[in-house]
Length: 302
Ligand SMILES: [Zn+2]
Image (cartoon, rainbow, N blue to C red; front, side):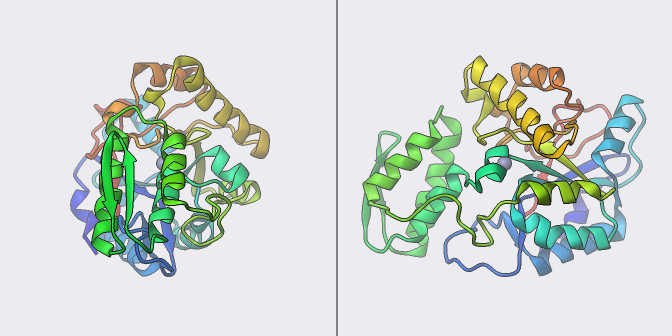
């Protein structure tokens, strides 16, 4: 496992971005990006960070930056995006035992309907491919063979294309589905990579003084791709839904995908209007107190 403690710096804040922690991976292709860490690797990462770092909550980050104070040496935060059940089941007990702070950003439709992200749906379909398939998407022809290499090459191209152009993710999923003739279901799956938390588990997490809950939109779409009315809905309704279901006053948020082109002034203003205090991106980097509360950088752990 990489030593993430090398990203801890003097008078700086390093925010780590996790998605999931699993006991074992029951799939061959899925999770090839390692967005879900094996439990033993997760513990190794934490042990390494603990030797040098000082884990703080994002509320402390907010207060430090508001007061224009410098961060203490080797400060770091732990964050989880999307709302996977394995956060509750596997990661949270480990964090609690180690007395480490963490923020969990949840996508409300994932919690409400045990829904999957567009890329998880595509990975699931590609996993199951047994014969050569030709697919036309992004005005291009893709050939997928029943090999590890070919499937991963295809998934990497889909990721690249979908994130740079204004993609309708729902259409992309259904287009691939019909072209390869996929008949199994693509939501409400209960394996360890797809199952999401339910509302009572979200509430339970929030009860711990070490944990906080943040928003991550309703549908996990890229906000900058949407028109103004839809962005307003994604932000305001996700915050309202969390409040309604759990009585949590939401002050934390993270942008889906989180790269530079996925959010801007429009999104930041809407978040502020809806009571959000702090919202990290997924751009790679380490923060000083000069950083803006809505542009904080994170480091993806995989
Ligand atoms: Zn996400």
